[in-house]
Amino acid sequence: MREYNKHNQERIILWNRRGHLRRKYGTTPEDIDAMLKEQDYKCKLCKKPFRSTPFVDHDHKTGRIRGLLCRARNIGVGHTERFNLQNLKEYLVS
Image 1: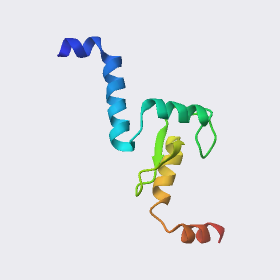
Image 2: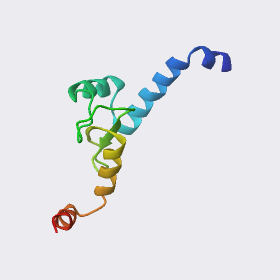
Image 3: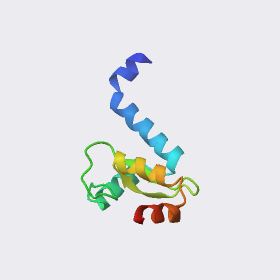
């Protein structure tokens, strides 16, 4: 088994990625690649080119994928989801 893993690292990485995307988001690497192309290889929020692997942003209640984000925006959205958005908006404009 170790010998197989040693000679098939790329295949194993792709297989693991495919399984992760299917289990967690119900999507495929091809779907993610199409989203990347549609977003012009940029974060959906800040519009800057990705410098590292994009994060799949999704609605935690419905599972619906909203887009691909850079790490900073993904963290920000995650924190923001926990707050009442109206209260947050009022706070930010005060």
